Image 1 (cartoon, rainbow, N blue to C red):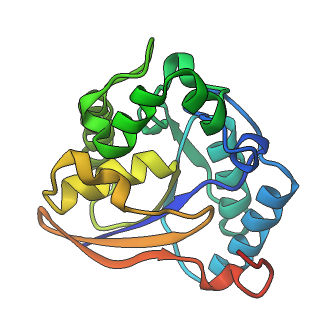
Image 2 (cartoon, rainbow, N blue to C red):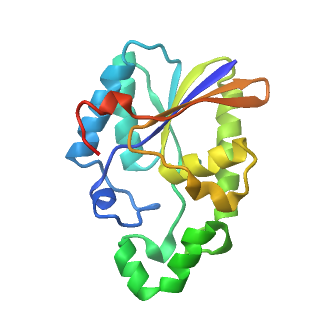
Length: 206
């Protein structure tokens, strides 16, 4: 049995401003740092064997805070990055709606049917994410591992686990520092917890 604890990174300035972030490499804002510290305290009494993260700053910074109480290193993986939004990165949803309303409407209805200019298709994104998870599960068989990555990364991975149409990936919501737990028996993943944010509710009001 292998246990995966999947956690979205803490908040950044662009998250607060509702900007497309993708591969843009932003650090956590103060709220994001506090979210990570609270979650680190919550997880400190639990045992984990390994920590993985996306190689982008917002995930790596979150991972370092979470791993510190366990005195464990963080293994950064480029293939756990968020989707590449290409030319959309840095734009707010409002700006993009004003410039490309048809593209944004199509993206919200079926994100698998459109490629952001200069970016990555959803099937390409899911393929690299799934391959990354299959690889780290294989190398950490029988371990309890924590993976800190991105909302989109978690969306396409959960869609794969549930064998859902990729166009429905945006039906999931993953909050900053929300915790999901996947138990893998042989090759069969079971979702036992999804986007748990109870440890944050005393400190933050949505």
